[in-house]
Length: 468
Image (tube, rainbow, N blue to C red; front, side):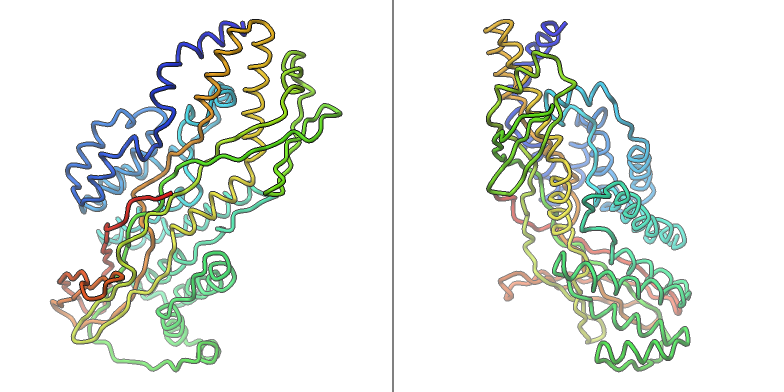
């Protein structure tokens, strides 16, 4: 039986040789290049012709389809794709056959399981689609789900939770939508929650300060709700003085998506077997201060023998490669007044920290995976030297980490809210790079209705390629 199983692996050898080196980003470089060049129709054509639209990578296909539809103002189509992705994530069940195969090959054989921050960004983009078509109540439902999902995800990690446990920007968007609906009490609560997350989590974990716009919105919501004591408290806390201003027009909430988030590559770490007793073998890395005991008491005698001969493991893990955006900051100008777009969400930073937290949780499983492969190799070699050598080759080729990820997400999100007179308004958007003499400029027009709020998202796709 074992020989038949090993033989089935050997049949895959040519395929493993062809696919063992390229990362997911490299395998999809034509699509990524089209996206980076702003050739969205071409990117859409490439996406639809991709064999990955079915099978284990369907969620990634739906992520990219939803993003492309959103970029092309196809909001209903975008939400259809994202809703399917959302349901697939909720319905993901362990396929134990694939789990077993992954244990002796690598995680790429399984359907893609999104990172926690990717899971909740599905709802953020669904909310943007609803905002674009004026369905603010539906948008509010989606934004609420961001932090509901984060709570559910972190409940699964009692021993090592993510540093990304609450989303400050989601609270801001909730507050902005409540504000647009003139529900100022709820807006105040949402803004206050956002402030708490920035101060207690984002500042420490992601080096993000409280946006000035949030401070003013919080004080304004307190004033409109009649929370005079709270207004005075925040005026003192922020060292600002809130002043009411007449508003005979409407408001524009302007989001700026800058650049692209990171892509996954891989790195490796060495572990040495330090002990073996009471049914456990322990592998450790002194440099990183890591030690992981693995129970092998339920293994076969041949596998135990294989484990006993192991002294060293080199394990592959995913890592992120940053794609630095070309632009560092931006502003909008209306009626002679300039408003800075304030940094509010660091998706790049959240990605790096979330992956690091996951790796600390899953290191033991990775060690078990490779140790099992090595033990099976030793067991096969004991039965047949040639078979053992062949398995050794297969193991070397399949010791590959999962480099799949959602690669059309923005690097960061900034925003501002401005008051505009009713009627048509001309807005000048300017984005600045390290060479401030050549900003990118674009003129936009908005029809403002008295007492109403418009939401708009501007995307700058200009980014540098990923670097090691």
